[in-house]
Length: 305
Image (tube, rainbow, N blue to C red):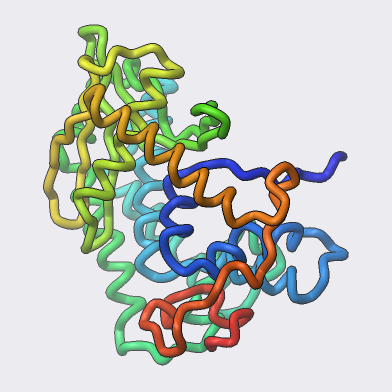
């Protein structure tokens, strides 16, 4: 089997990482490369393992998204709808397995497939009851999702679900772009609605709009949908709110320009653009004591433990 090639491919998460700590960006996309191999150098392996770490807050969203995806795949494929109690039971059982595997260290046998928490890996002091509260929050959000109008509506028209958590790759200018839409559903009138589930307590509307603009670019450039027939909705499961976003020609062009400009900036840091080679020293760390370091998965390999 041929080795994977480390390409510079654009994604919303990669652009967001590049805009933050440059050293963490380098660790994520260059320093960790090849860490999954049996013969990987120890530092590369450690960096890759730290890349796979998640936080309690991030994991909550992953569990809720997983419950939503499973339920919608069931109805789209013609099977019986998943009852909310079954969804809650499955999500909580899976969450407990994740926690147990992280605490025991068993996840390290397969870091790419299992869940490891930053809180356990770095032996962080834990607030009393924090993990119990996380389980309660997962249950609450799964119930809220099942009760939300957009989610219930999808169960009424499963045959219209066009995209569901599929990883897509498409060219924009001279760079390929990755997107994963939570859900895209045809509206029955020649258009489509893009739904994006959010589970966190804080989300900047500008960032959500930028992400949805990239989804709109995908929908028009790849699926051939007209921009004036697209609707995007940000469904915040934590706060039980639904916000409609405009995904018009202007928003799509803004997404295209963002991809172009951030890609150019990423390339400007490379020592070999054709080979996508980046030198660690060209990606500086944040100043010592920066609050971002405390929640970074790479704080071990970075010396900010």
